[in-house]
Length: 103
Picture 1: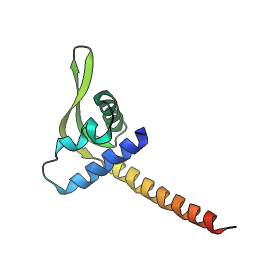
Picture 2: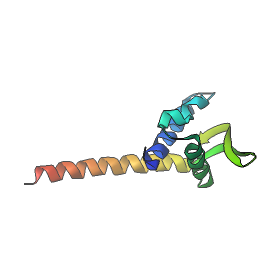
Picture 3: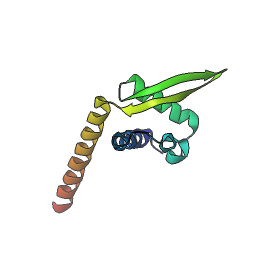
Picture 4: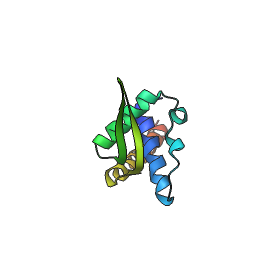
């Protein structure tokens, strides 16, 4: 799966989780996105480092690294990303529809 689709889906899941007290961490499993645990951990760390999510604790297991969830949540910046992407997707669909109408 495309990394940016995974990022969008992660943020969307976390946005929907704002309505629940206890987030089901299995919603962010690598199986949900059909990617490896290593890739998922890397994406989650990037999202936190860039301020789109919060609540991750990087952990090391010898040579291996991973993340532990500690009340993982979407941030305002993450919400803005979702809003901008939704707007851009709608604009692209409108532009495509207009292009289809023009002979």
